[in-house]
Length: 236
Image (tube, rainbow, N blue to C red):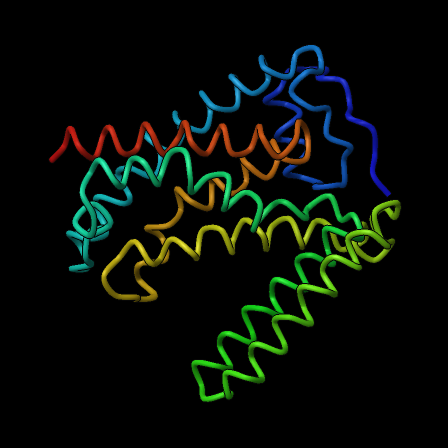
């Protein structure tokens, strides 16, 4: 069961802190709601300020201290192509995958389950499952996806999702950050602190998704990516 959007009493930052203390299902206001763009601007400024001010020294210290590799995303593709992907393309795709279902609506959860089933089939194919079985399974999933989307469109979030939402919210933010381990040439447990900026981003964008809506979350993500890429390029 979702709660109505609370008024921004005490300011956006206080509302954000209260949400982090007790994440809960909200009914997003949408970007057309009064004050929505102002709140989005405040959260973008906070997002970027923390990315620059707090994790930066830690991210710079740990590679020197422990011999960890620096992110090599800039070296994998040209800066122009990376900017074209990291700003207008990656944020909406990641927002849909990681936060699109956070409202807990039944059909959103159904889509998530079908998407995970499809990924499972592709993994099974890589492990030797015959192509015919994979094709049949994907076809069945497409039919099930469409049927579930239509059948569940009027159902809200189930009670179990609302009860588990605090854990679900933090797990989604953690999953968002762990995906960015791929920015580094090899994985190490010591590298986990290097993705603290992405964990912070997951918390900010998750809050915006619940308070304002999905578009607000990927606008904030795109803005942060723009700043990060600009600073990385200026630093060489």
